[in-house]
Every structure is written in structure tokens, then in C-alpha cells.
Image (cartoon, rainbow, N blue to C red):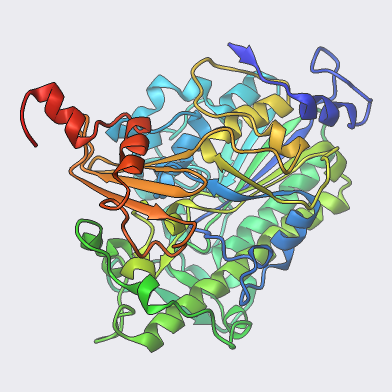
Length: 491
């Protein structure tokens, strides 16, 4: 067991009421407000996206630290959240699916990030979607049954609302309507208030919870999980109208389907779980593609407004000076890039996602960090800021250096994992994707050079075998030559 408490951790503690300068007995420890947003790619105004209408998240970035190159480790909801709470790379297949937390928690739930905070005297609360199952129950309709992450939360729940169950709320349409798999539309624009959809209910409950916490003593870790912009892109029509001018178009090169095996991606969630008008396919129908992108942008603006309500409550209740704020997305989403409408791949738009931290006493607020950072880094960062011991074996690095200095360099490249033996490594310049990487070598590689090809349109494997060998070794994979030497055969 070790304690990670960098310089910023001391600054934070020293800046809180009571003037505590350490994490010992009697020290005033900061609260933590952790906001998780589902399927949010970097389509925020602060990233320079012209069509984005995200004033609340942009304002948080202007007073905190935006990490412009934050990468998740798995491009699916449940597994990415497992990495977040577990603090370790998902190197085994059991940690790659949406049921990763439910199926593996017996080995690590007691050492999860919220469990550590709870054991250190924090009140831990989880509202909305913080694991795969909103509310944290794994039984029928996700409303009953065993806990998904036992012992982590003092309370885990979803707000009461017309959707009746957490499962219905997760994929909720207007005024309590539930999804019919394969039939319900991928997006909806309903004439009605924000409260017609689940995230407004989450925000209202979050504000009420903050009001109760403000009147209590003792530190708290309050995690709030919003559903949008996850499919279905279903939000009030007013948010669609906000984007009547349309959204950015993709270049033909960016939208082209890549070569095998990545070209096998069939956007199964988008195509299989939702119904589409006869003959309408965004890969071949430009108008339908634009309408779908507009619906996603509307969903982003809608959830931005709900997050803004929570952040405004924090300010109104005079909790900002004593609270670490984190806004994190579990992964990105492709809106036609590489002919993919979804996230289950290892391309940049699937793994790169927003991360904003704001801490009391933050040095040079508003300046972004371009260091490569990972979701796995959040466990040691938050524990360190609050003076909480962490278990041995965490894979992340504390982000205290980047919080103290936005120009601090990357500590390491970013890694990503997916099913079928897929894995990737992202450096400042390169991304190597290995396919079928079981048994010590991969069956196929993709190598992208972001220095001259930010849209990932050209595979440089044949031109740069030296880079492939170097990055494959960092993934624990052998090149063809090394594999042949080890087996005594010619490959």
C-alpha cells in the first residue's frame, strides 16, 4: 500500500477551510464531484468544434484543466468504467465486455476507488450510470438483485421517473417510453421540456443531493452519471433546433471504409439495436448521415445543460472551494469516420474522450494540457489529491504534474484494448493497432502517423516496419522476424 500525495495535493488541502496542510488526523479533506458522461466524443466548443454548443463544459474548462489528449482503455461503457474504478489495464478478456465489473468484482471490489474513499471516511454516492448498470443492480430490469460493485457505495440509485426501471431509463424516450430493440428509432426530437428525458431527472436529483450534502459534515465522493449522448439520440426538439445550421461534414477520405480486418466493423449497436426508415443508411445516404450527426450534437448540448445545472448548484452552495470536480467521458464515438457509426474499435475517435479536472488551488486555471493521459490515471490522481492510500499494482500515473503545470509532458503512451485480441498504443506521433494479438504476435497491424494524417486514412505498416517493431514490443508483441526465430520456422 502506498500514499500518492503530490505537491498539488498539499496545495488543495492547504486551501480548504481550516488551513490544513497535510492529510493527517484533523486535516480538512476535499470533497469530490465526479461527473460521468456516456459516449461523449471531443465535440465541445473548447476543442474548437464550430457547431458545438456546450457553454457549461467550456466554462468548466476555462476554470479548470482540460486534458486535450485523454484516452480511455476500452471502447465500451461497462469495461471502460471498470478500468476507471479498478485502476488497472484490462489485459484479460474478462475485463473487456460490458459485464466486466459484474463478472470480475470479486477480485478487486474492496480495493476499488470508491471503496478506498469509503474506507477512508468519505461518504460515497453514485447517482445514475457509473457502472454498466445504472443504479448498480444486476437483476431483472437492473432494478433488483446483487450489487455490481459490492461495498463501494453508501448509496447507488437512479432518480424516480416515468421510465419505471433503470433499464428503461438507460435507453429512454420521451415521457417514460422504453426502447424496443431493433424497432425504436436511433434518434428522436420531442416537443417538450428537458424533463421529458432522463438526464434532466438525474440533474434535478443531483442538485437535491448536493443541497443535502452541503448541510452535512464530513467529506463526500459524489459520482453523477448522465446517459446522453449515448444512443438513442433522443432529446427535446429545442436542442435539435439549436443545431439547425447543421454540423461539420466528413471528407470522403475520413468516411471511407478501411481495409480488412477493420473494415469488418458493422456498427452493430447502431444498426441492430435501433430501427431505421426503409432504405435509409447513413453510410450511403448523406441526408440521413447529416440528420444523425445533428441529433448527436443536440444530445451533447442537452447533456451540457444538465451538467451545467449541477455545477451551478455547487457554486450556489459555496462548495467550489472545497470540492475537486471531474468531468469524464467513458469513450468517444464515430459518426461515420471509417464508415463506422459507433465506438467498438481502436481508432482515435473511439478512444479519445473529454476529461476536465478542477481543483481548489489549481495552478494556471484555464490552460489546457496536451500531455497524453489515460483513464487509468484517475485512480492515483484522485486518491492522491485526497490523501488516501492506494493498493499496490495500479497501472496509472498521478496527473498532479499536469495539474501543477499544464506544460508538463506525457508520462507514458496510451494503451487500448478490445475483443478478439485487439490492442493499441498511442504515442505523440503514432498509433499502432494490433489485430488478433493472441499468442505473442499479431495477425495484422495498422500504423497511423498523426503528424501528416490526423484522419487515419493511410496505413504506414509497409513503409515504417521499424516503428511497427518498436511499438509492437511495447505492447508485448514480437515482430514476424522474432516470432520466426523463436519457433525455428520461416514466416
